[in-house]
Amino acid sequence: MSYDPIIFIAGMPRAGSMWTYNVCRSLIRAVGKQPWPEVVPQDESAAIREALSRPPLSGQAYCIKTHFEIPLGKPHMRIICNYRDIRDAMLSFMRFTRCSFEKALAAARGSMKLTDHYLQAGDRYVHPVNYEQMTSAPVETIKAIAGFLSIDVSMEEVRRIAGDLSRESVQHRLEKLAAVEVDDSGRVSAEGKDGKLSSAMNQDGSFRVYDHETGFQSNHIGMHQDGEWRKVLSDAEQAELMEAASDWLLRYGFRP
Image (cartoon, rainbow, N blue to C red; front, side):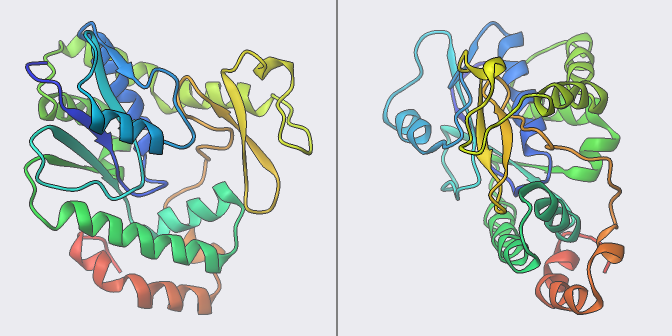
């Protein structure tokens, strides 16, 4: 890297931002640096404050995943914004957090606003990552991210990263997380007592397991197909969602 920007992966929830985050961390390691924070926090607020208050240490590169609004037009920042058909993202959010339609719709409104913040300004320090393109062409997506970050890596390294973060590889990791037990207070069983694992509460009071090495969580990805919102949501819910999202969908080229 010819400079030391603060890298933010800052797109909407449930649009592949955790995959993109791990891609960036892998690219940083590929050029001999250490992504910071080394341990992935559940709450990134303190990491953002520290990154904005001091330059990285020698051999470090700041790489932070967030769903906060990061200010634009900053030459010392590089922002990657994942986005997705908001209807699929909203249903994925409902399933992941086990929340109601009303809460998921409120989250979807926030996601649309967040995407507009990053992608409507034409900021040259922002790189969009479309979820459909990411899942269908991961190698090309990783290559484009490396170019945006001015990280020079070989195609062999790009393909290796794509393999390490393939759906099958991530699913295997998630299956291990799903096998870790969490008690009623949110404490993980012995497998997580080394500090690498903790729990995150779902909105129904249950827990999922959080991996601090990658940020992935149990149930992070599912085997569901895009477009299932048409079958899962009631007619009234679909109408309410479309009323909120129609203009946004057209703005980003998604079919009604």
